[in-house]
Image 1 (cartoon, one colour):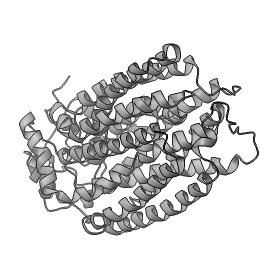
Image 2: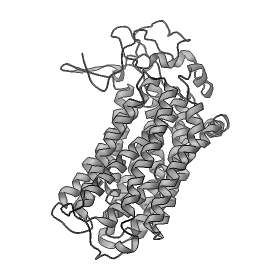
Image 3: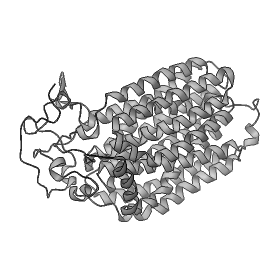
Image 4: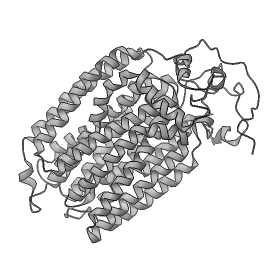
Length: 510
């Protein structure tokens, strides 16, 4: 195998004065691009389709999406049933508190860890926690060992903090500026397809069941799938080996040390203080999950209808990611204007969708659903269609929110090292919010109070973030600006391909 660092040929360097936005949809022009000679830089051809090389952003993002498809995707499918698929949500809530408590701490500093250890090792370790957590739920089905769920939740918090920080850095730093919305969209659609398929497992296994908890087969299937996801992460390449279609590379640290990355975390907060205004949006982004899964799906529906709702919820996320991801990459509109329009749209749908949620929540209280013998709604019952569509819109809203937050962060810098820290801040703060909300639900807080906290936090966080979105997002960030937070030089990362073509998806016709 040829050495990764050896080049096939030398081409003139890219014009250093051209901005990254001029490369918005960079693609390879055959025969005019310098690539190292290793097999990971050789494009693949299957019939009429030409697939990107293994170390391309498209291939690496797709692989990461399938890691998340198999690990967090299965976790989401199980969580979406409410209470981790159990009758009583208490054990899963306590596990959730442990999970998101450790997630919030580790996640905040995980950018430092990912920058030091590399993307592949960080993701690989991160995937293992999902297997152990699902094993704890399987165990609970037989011995009611709540302590195992709490331990597994705490361990998963550590693992998930690493996995999601590495994933966020890949999704925001690998594409060129003009393709970030689509990359976020591609990831979110594949990832949520995991939750859709995962939710079909309990739906199929419990199709004729009117019980309120899932069977062992569901947990065993998820356990196997999450283990496969952890193994898949080992096949990735690290960021320093990734090459875009125009020959440019991801900006990282060539020689990271623990000291440099710890100082880099502090430097990010010192030089990019404006990121603090996005923290409330980060905090709100997982806050509503507990309310939606436990106070709506678990509280009001039987197991097969919860499974159906779950499938529709994650399917709506795919639609939301597609709509918002591609809309954020409409190049006929300037990037600052796209950012502002997205903010306005987010505010409007927050008012509309959660306004509908208020009308629904007025119809019942926690006391009405507290008893195990309380009547549960089935999809065959009259009046099911309304809450079904509400739950679908909740899923659509979640994807819209997450896609926009990632795009906003990716619009502030293209530096992979800084974006790893941004992703860590995002997942850490997000998880702190989730931990608080899990605890609030475990204390049997009235459902209407939980609902009000979700709606107020979402709307308020948008108002706080407005100055960053309206004033800090520019048409482009120059490579010179991005390189200030790295030990790399322009010659290390600049594009070498002058023939730029629109960037395709994973496969394109030759």
